Length: 260
Image (cartoon, rainbow, N blue to C red):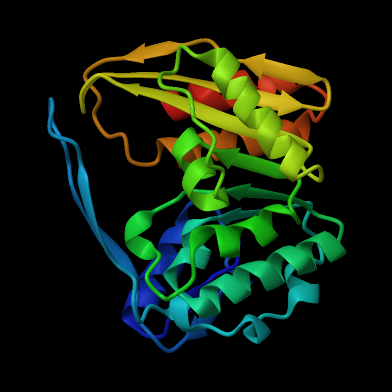
């Protein structure tokens, strides 16, 4: 786990919480700054959720890319995952993301990136496509939804109007593959929001062996939809790391994990 946490009791509590779940925190940097937070107003019925981000001045937004010993960080690593939220919070964090990905590739790691476009975070003078495009060109696995691709990569062609337009999603994946031939896998999550409490959910995965689609889940009485995308990424990474030749299984496992 590679990040920068604030010095003091809040940083101590964060380290203890990570360690409680068995996460190796030996690569965590303690630095000046504070803990970044966000506030969630949960949606209900036809009212969507609303998020307020509070990341300015956080330790991770201020840390220099030179603060990490990258040779040590990736000495026993096989996979490095980065979220698009990190390069969105500051110019320093964008440089940190780029440096980390370059170092991971040099160390022989598979690199995955979840675009995770968040309009409210891009406020330091750089556009998302100018930052995210070069990052994607270095990665092996891309995870996104249609809005992420449009807003983070500047792809302006029409995106599918609904999750039933699977041919449209396949064409969108083809466009991304043509622009970034370095990608071995492209995963797109499809969500149909009937209301805040009722969602349809499925995903597509483009692999060297072909394009696969998962089963569709119709989810009712949603308790908490925050983190579904991260659960998808975790499921996909775990599956591909364990069974890299079984793309259909990886897709089904990731989609089920995010559904749950």
